[in-house]
Image (cartoon, rainbow, N blue to C red; front, side):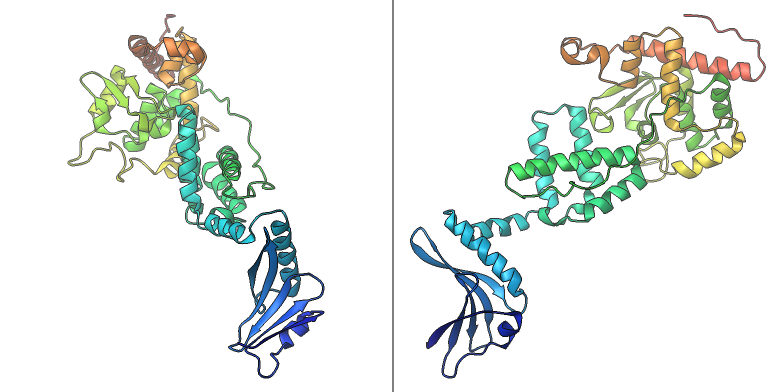
Amino acid sequence: MKRADKRITLTEKKVRDLEIDNGKDEQVFLDSEVPGLTVRIREGGSRKYVVNYRLNGSRERYVIGDTRIHTLMDARQKARDVLKTANDGNSPKAERAKKAAAATLTFSSVADDYLAVRKQNMRPRSFIEYERHLKKYWQMLDDLPLTSVGDSVAKGLRHIAKTHGNTAANRSRSTLSAMYAWAIGERFCKENPVTGTNKAQEKAPRERVLSDADLASVWNAAPDMDYGRIIKLLMLTAQRRDEIGKLRWSEVDLEAKTITLPSTRTKNGRQHTIPLSDDASAILRAIPMRENRDPIFGDGEDGYSGWSAAKVTLDKRMGGAVGDWTLHDLRRTGATRMADSGIQPHIIEAVLNHVGGHKSGVAGIYNRSMYEPEKRQALDTLATYIRTAIAKASGANVTRLKQ
């Protein structure tokens, strides 16, 4: 093969106009600005930027790519990077192979690896939060290369804020940032795409506790259908919305008068038993079981789902009597009214399935009591409180006895 090398001062126009001398199969043009950078042209039409360098005494060649794709400016910068890598004693080809391997890593695969590592030393409740953020809220990134999520992060944060609220968006942002910090440490990537994104403006935590009149209004207006029954059970059990809305018959024991939520259905990842007062049991007993269906409420496989429209309808039935309130306010109200009735704080925590206060740290390790009798007494007391509030609202002369 005949070949000839020429050293010239390259420009974009010259690169486009370069031609092989007559009788040559291949010709290499040397850039006079960046040592080692060449334009290699072959008779078949191939035109590529190539960098020649020495690594540990050996001559090597690194192909940057087609001149019709890469600009001369970009080729020169890439050539400088290659020469620097080689001068530092590292292989430019090996570095490129690492980057190519990293590009094949999907967000989903790295998220799985990260969660597996964190699960070993993270508290169950924290792990469940991290898993929900990465596998549910950031599911939109699953099939993207880890290093190419780009503007999808900012777009995703806006979507999470819109569908799950600003607090969820900010916590998901923190979890994603932590995952990328770990990935950088593992040399899977070099940059954290969360850097520079905006945090959502969070509202101050709600403090609304419904009055006795409010409780009576909500109870009396709750329709005799799935949503109304869920509302009443939330009032009587002080549990979370989805814990009741997704309730299954397999989790209910009407004879023992209990609901037992498996660890997969609780926020802190711990099985939770909820004693049922007579009033709560009566609501469940009145619901007809549907053949071959375990979920109690709704028509989908995941339980009840029509929250927003049903809440609007309920507020209209009350004529705005209760004002601004949310379903979670019922949980806070239940805890407050149990405290008002003399129930001890650690029993209320047990009813709510909170792991904190007296059950945190060393105390929680040694105190394994679930306080089942005390929890039953607490929820019976709450049921009596609600029943009394409803009676008073109807004009009955009722005096609430102190516990």
